[in-house]
Amino acid sequence: MNASMWQRHPLVVIVLAQLCGTSLWFSVNGVGLALSLDLGLTEVDLGRLTLTVQAGFIAGTLGIAVTGLADRFRASRIFAISCLLGALVNAGFVLVADQAVPALAFRFATGLCLAGIYPLGMKLVIGWTPRHTGAALAWLVGMLTLGTALPHLLRGSTLQLPWEWPLLGASTLALLGGAMINFLGDGPHLPPPAGRVRLAEGLAALGERRFRAVAGGYFGHCWELYALWMLTPFLVMREIERLAASTDLVAWLSFGIIALGLIGCVGGGALSRRLGSLWVARRALSASGAICLAYPLLAWAPPGLLLALLFLWGLTVIADSPQFSALAAATAPRERVGSTLAVMNAVGFALTIPAISLTTTLWSLQGTWVLWWLLPGPLLGLWSLLGLADPAHPASAPARQG
Image 1 (cartoon, rainbow, N blue to C red):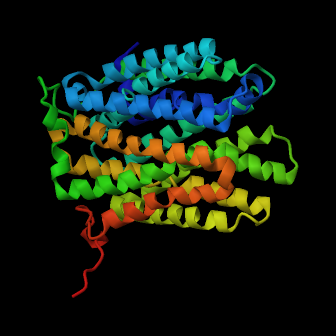
Image 2 (tube, rainbow, N blue to C red):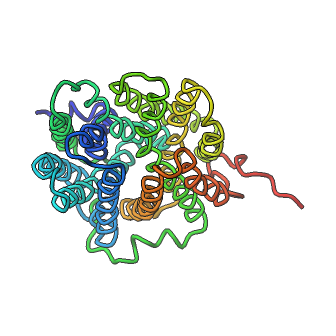
Image 3 (cartoon, rainbow, N blue to C red):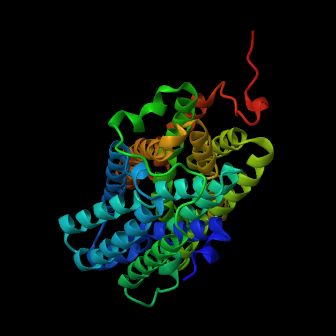
């Protein structure tokens, strides 16, 4: 197949491939209700499976960072191979789902493979579309969001079929995504693959004050985001039961709530071209933090109102992520941008583990009040951004007193 055909619209190819590849991330959560009914898995068991994916992703991104893999080899090759391996281990989970240790091992391996998809997708975007990086990354993270929601859509559209089908569907999509990037190749706007990379080079950007501030905002965002996505079916189920409606709606509503983040990302990306990435990141983080604070206080409200609030939360909770990535890419050493983004991802996703563990463990005891365990993320993220200015929009810095 002619590579030039793919290269005419590289951003379209990358974001669609990201959508397909990241459908592996929450593939098990999409069939969580069926696993609970068929295999007797509890909320804590599903939480452990999600935590294991996160742990695998962290291990993978740290491995990429300390070896400099992302800067020594072609990003498109790593992405394609990761999609292939991820599709295989995700499909393998079907065979061991009823065995605790092998199931966890397969989900850990899935996380390892995702480390070669998400951060490398960011590098591919930077390599193909260096202008308006915030808007381009908004589409990429939007597709990550849609990919995260996709297992719920797959389950909702296959309710009459065994739970194995949506998992195999996610693996098929991952194979498609890897093939697309293999045909596309690397972009022309990045340095050629580097030689051997020292351990410290992937961590060097953390010594720069502006990068630390951006990373701090991103870390706070991560604390909130994945735990909320994990809890979304539980929160939806609570309202469905209060409405005495069919549980078939849980998968569809969960998909809609998470997938709405695509609009938040793309809308935030459009705003970033006019107002700056930092302006968008601050306001999205403030909005999601406000909902996090208010939701437990409104637990008595009509189910329809709480579902609407969940949709608003899904819209805002991810809108800041591509802007943090754009700000990080702007402050990272150009020749080590892949390793630097991998480090930031690794630390951010490490913070998702205690957040997911706390909320899934305490859900049965605290109900909606468990959401307040997520509130420190937005608060500390906003504190980290105090006084920071966007280099493209200096007016975005808050005025200093005195």
